[in-house]
Length: 202
Image (cartoon, rainbow, N blue to C red; front, top):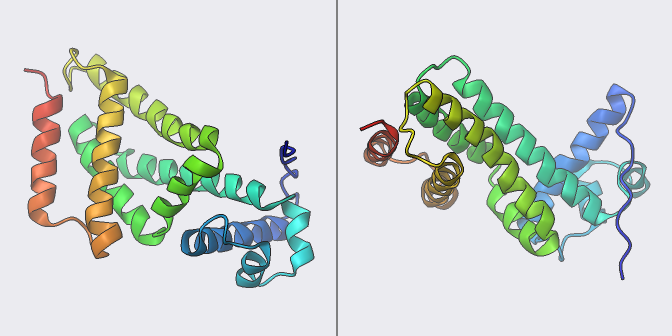
C-alpha cells in the first residue's frame, strides 16, 4: 500500500512563496497538457525554471503538488467570485456576476477542466472536496437570499447550489473551453431568464 504524502510546511520567506507558486503554476500547465500519469516532476521544474532538487524543498512527490494545485485553483476561483459579487445586493445579480467571474477565470486557467477531471481518478476525496467546498459558500449565500425574500423559500439551497454549479460548468465547457470565447449574448440572456424564473419567489 502506498504511503500518504507528508505535506511540507509553507515557505516562511517571500522568495520561497514565489518559488512554490511558480511550481504550482507550472504544474497546472503540465498536468493539464500531459495528464497526471504522463506528467513528470522534471517537466514541472523545467517549466518553472528551477532545479529538480528545488521541487523537493516544497513538495514530497507529484501527488502532493497535484493536491495543492487543486486546492489553489479552488481557493482562487472562490476568491474571484466573491470579489465579483461583493458590491451587489440582489441574489440574481450576484449569480450573473458570479457566472461571468467563472468564465473569466476559465480564460486564465484553461486547464481547469482537465485538472479537476483527473482529480476524480487520482484522489476521489479531493475531487469531492473541490465541489463540496464550492457548494458550501453557495449554500450560505442562497440561505441569506431566502432570508431577505430575494429567492423562493420553497427551494433547497444545497440542491440549487449544485444545479447552478452544473449550469456554470456546462456553459464554461461549451463556450470558454471549447470555443475559446465568452458565452454568446443570446445564451447569457437565456441564462439570466432561467435563473430569475427559477429562483424568484412566486
